[in-house]
Length: 220
Image (tube, rainbow, N blue to C red; front, side):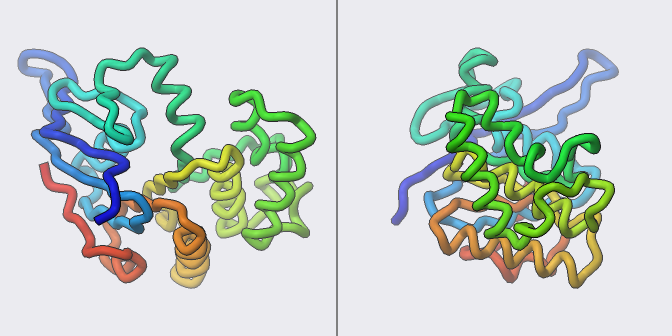
């Protein structure tokens, strides 16, 4: 059996106090193993974003523990968490989160600037990744000049620039039509075949066919 990359152990996330208290997660348990394509099913409006924040080390739990490669990160400082995210996890979001004034190439390069990558090396890597996701001819186009599917491909390329082992995708097809959604899922599947661990959070049962293991209902 492959080793655990991420483990959530009875994770709670509580916002507010008293009558305003909201229990967004209640004792969530989850194991993510090296090399999986894991699809996590959770209905919209049921704490899905909070679950993603926990899995992606974007936040720390109110109770419980989170392990990344065997290390308990629940008590890490924000600077340590930021470093972990930048090196080990690439994020793909439903809304693309591209900067409208930057070209596709410039958007992809952004994360490399925060990790101290050599500029020449980063530039060549960004061009290579954009070619691999089918956008070699669109690298100088800005988001407003790209289709929704092309923008999501840029977002995937951006997630890959620091060569993370884990790709965390939160509803990556949520703003796309069915045909484009399949194209994006094929890109993620190709990355999985190259050795990336893919974690897909979605409410769409149709996407479970891309998983390498049985889909996991994100219940807490």
